[in-house]
Image (cartoon, rainbow, N blue to C red; front, side, top):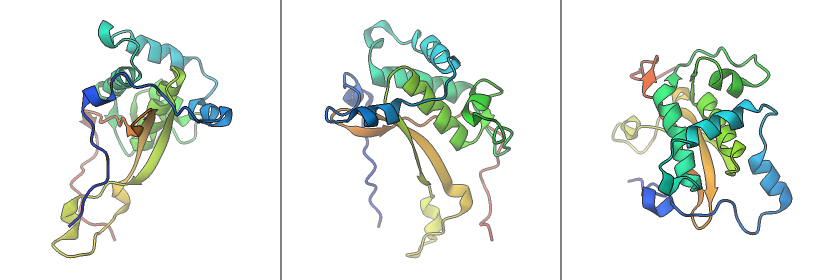
Amino acid sequence: DVVSQVPQFDFPDLLGREIGAPDWSVSQWEEYLALPDDPRYEDLARDLIDDVRPEFAGDPYARAMAIKQYLDENGIYSLENVHAAEQDPAGSFLFGDLTGYCVHFAYAATYLYRSIGIPARVGVGYAVPAANRAGGSALLIQAVHGHAWPEIYLQGRGWVIVDPSPSRTLVDMSMDPQD
């Protein structure tokens, strides 16, 4: 049996929380707020958070969710990589056709969060279906299960995953095991 250690929070649990950790050094703040020198990130993020309901307008988590919702509704998941050769692949994705895979979504979201002062980072790992155990004790991990996701830091909760899930995909996710 496997027990997930991923924290599960409800929306109200994350509202009203301050960002960052009180004991972070200046360099830590700089690291988690660094982004490309492109004003379009902040311009887009500010446009997106304008739609946050007035009672949540200043809340960091509500703002992050508004950005996530935009990427959910407008992004298209694809394994075709037309952004890799660009100087800023996340910018090429975000200000281009919004078609990309998890790395594009994760960095685009992270830079949007950071552009409005929310400390963020990209996490990487694997998201593997439990069915890959096939009843045994071994777990088949395939390249297709690699994943990247954005996280924001909220006081009292730590790093919280705010991962876009695009509603449209160009990928058949029902793949047979890879060699």
